[in-house]
Image 1 (cartoon, rainbow, N blue to C red):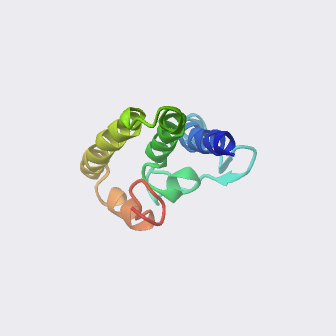
Image 2: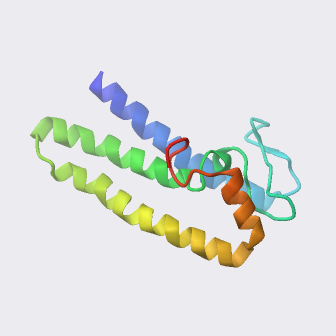
Length: 134
């Protein structure tokens, strides 16, 4: 069951990371399309902007970061279970240490770039990385 849980966690993270990046890419390539992924996700934006606020980007402002962290945890767990060493946990700790300050920087950069539209986005999507938590 542990292997299955690790695989599930890894692919859940992959879906978040790759899905968010693909949604953004698809929107940049086809901004006139109102859905993506075969109609599964509505492509909604903050009014008068190109800031996506639906699908992956409606769950948290950096859902792709959460996906990367989940993948790193899924890769650390087997090493920890086999060895009992905390060394494998350096990988997810690295990502957390990288992404938390980066998220604050991203918000500051986007606020400067998009102004009121970014403020509207932060109100529409209040969670920074982890939906319903932070």
